[in-house]
Length: 123
Image (cartoon, rainbow, N blue to C red; front, side, top):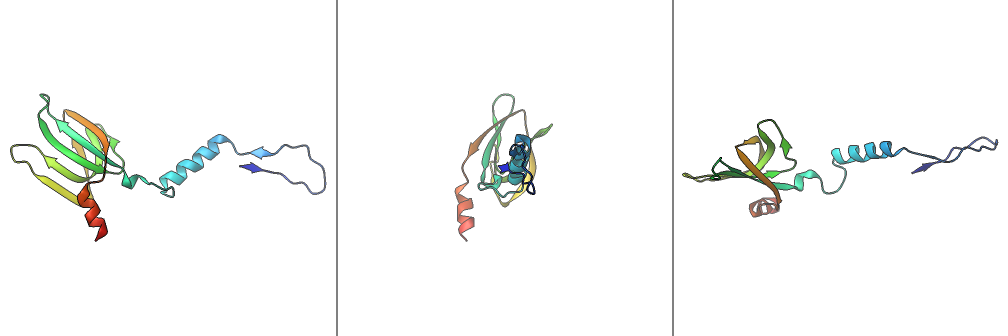
């Protein structure tokens, strides 16, 4: 982006001014956090797999949006939770449920949107 200075009839030897890169970076960050860019964070899904110290399965979560690291684990908006044995249960949260995932070992990776959420969007 280039801004040009105009004088009133007097010749100027001032070169064209450019906005500093830091200002452009600040504008880009503000635009992304306001959600005005396409592909906002609400369409990003992450799977979190929680195991105990021996590697036994405890729970698996599917999170929508950002996954934030906190002191105890990860702060997420959960849309699905699969609990571990002996009474395994699949729980779905169509509107999302803000929670903290804790455990001795937590693996996380990007994943796709659960199929049942596609069905909810079409209704």
